[in-house]
Image (cartoon, rainbow, N blue to C red; front, side):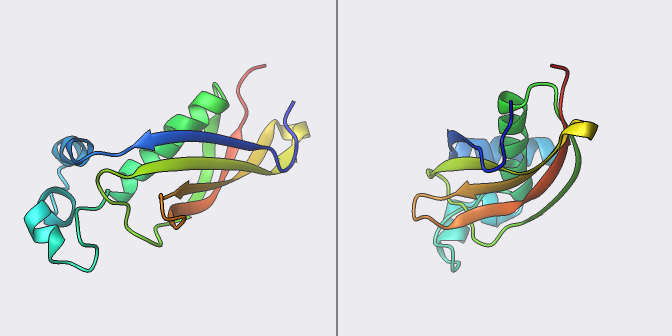
Length: 130
């Protein structure tokens, strides 16, 4: 049974190979994601994750912790760059439960090793079959 304030966490190490593979699949080969020499000269100091790669990790974590759930709506922003080689914590906090509709609102964040959020937002899910 879900409770408001309940927290779920998953860890994930993001590598340059992850960035490269995501670039190949998505077609987004911006050098900030795939060229360490170029990215080292930017204010990030290294290659950073695609925002949608972070979102994909979050989506996988939601499926892991809420099997069968469907995301109905989501809003997110990417306040800081997540660098290759960083292990992130994907934190999902139950913000609100609408039991009559089998829905829940989740606060979602990916937390970098320095404590800064790489992704933060909120999503509405339809809970899967019980």
